[in-house]
Length: 438
Image (cartoon, rainbow, N blue to C red; front, side, top):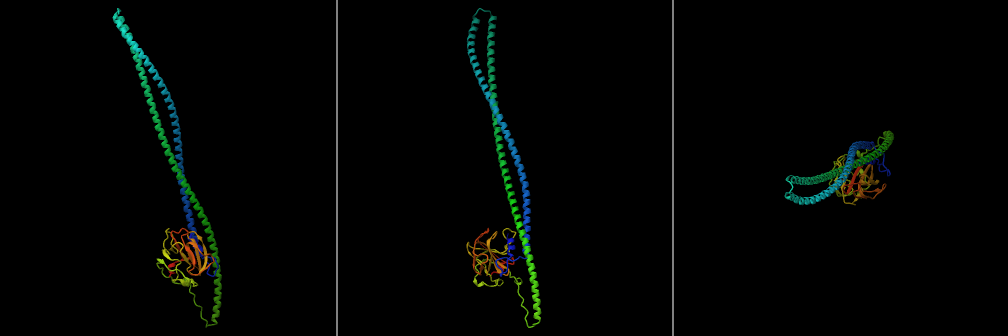
């Protein structure tokens, strides 16, 4: 943007012109072309970043797809486990009911056996005594006692079988309970796995959304740079036309001056007593003084410097505000890619800013990077610039004298500190204020 300002500043007219800028020189066009080339390079860089971002976005999309498929599989597994768990609960309920019936049957049989055994042993004990005391023969008695032992063994076997069934049922119940615990543990593990997958999905979705937002921002930047490129291209075309018009006008004026000089020489030859015209000293032929290292400025312009030719103020110029010189002409800026084209004077907020010389205001508006900016044309292609003002007190077309308060210091336009940014320019070219200051 500051390079664009240089091109705009090169349009200033001489002091005799109204509030308008003159046609620029070819150097302004070259600066704009360099700016255009830089914009094109930025667009190419951003487009490469977008292509890389698209590749990253595709990878994130694939990862998101795999995560969603894994979550779907986990949910199907959980659903199947839920059905198996429900079926196992039903089977377990049937087993419990069967076990309850078996217990009742065993208890009933036990009670029956208990009664039978009591009755049997009571009767058996008496019968055995009777058999011994009876007059029956020994063989018959032994045979009846064998029948009693057979019945007792059958009853004992029945009791043993019932006990075995009870043990078997208990083992089955324990196995079923263990299986249920296993399924509960597996279901818990699957749910934890599903939760982890969903968290992973959220992370990948956030990454995907972030990449999409970054790509959208970069596309917007590309669109903005392309719009800037179009505007700059139009400016270059206009500069080229104005430069051609100025060159044509210069050629016409040069031809006219040559004719007038030829006529004057002819007239001078007829009058030998006439002195030749004095050679005019051009400002560009003046020897530049080495820059001085300014640390602080405490002198401000006053009315005594009003009306003087601006060139005559070199070495006598007073800076427009009191304060510490924080940044100097030619110092490297914070971005490391550009240098200061003027100086920055740190001041208090709302401190007065003074015009450094007589002139006419040609610009008084907000400009990106400079905030509230004031530009004064001092004639002869010389301009003074006052940036980052809190307020501007003059309007384009206003005449000002040296020492007039034209603004108040501030930090508009994104300045890091409160103060004044001050530049001097001649035909659009920045000048070192230290070579002009008193």
